[in-house]
Image (cartoon, rainbow, N blue to C red; front, side, top):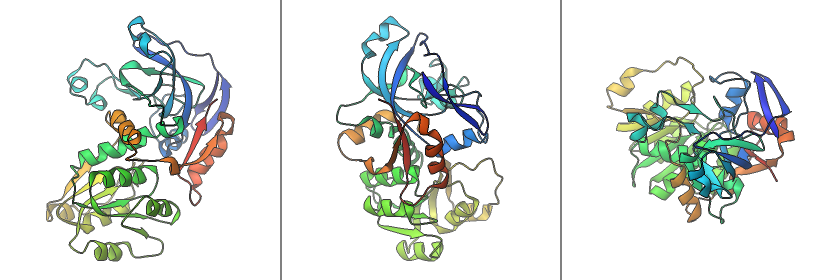
Length: 338
């Protein structure tokens, strides 16, 4: 099978690999769509712990080709999405649904081969059947939509709250879509430039702020004059986090959904202490695939506008370059296999 392989950081190529055979408890998926995530770039560049050589890709959809256990044979032939979490299912963390806390946790696309390939392996316990009404390309985006759902759940977001989203990439825009369904109000999206903000406007943002052009703090004080109830940072940038703490109203919440690339940051602790702010870590999607699929199925969320480039595996360099440079209007490049 064809697959994109990271031999080591900064070294990628297309290779012909053997089609993998699923062990018990796993399914082999014929990959139909795999989206390129900004986190994949970190794996390519060696900024995130990974096991090389590696086939990346953790946002995917496909058709179950075969399974490793007879009791799972009912999955064969079904169109699916699924969790990329590989866990023991036996420990306290797993039994409570907190798979990411499992001591044996490994993630497909980071420690196990992922979806930039014609076939991949995924655990059966994480599979969700894809309704026919959802295209494979859209279904692959259930992973970032799940991140948005998990972030809002961790932040205890509720209807009527004001919300500021910092970052207009796929995660920020998924948070916008989900927050609108949940009934949050005066949802403002800010980013450095207008590229993703134009999509945010089309998706129904109350307002957008291009921080290269306008004073971020001055603008949000006009839009949320009593302060902001909830700020979600999807950038991981020090300056954005510092400003978030100043913008929040007393008792407000900051959810950190962006990857900080291991950097040590300067934070004024009194901004948190004096205002009694809550700062929440919000990484990953925490088993939200089924909920994400449901939002797509009933039409509450449509992420079709995210798919700005459909490519073949052989065009991986183009896809990664687009994800890296993010030209205006670009959100996602998606590998599509016949």
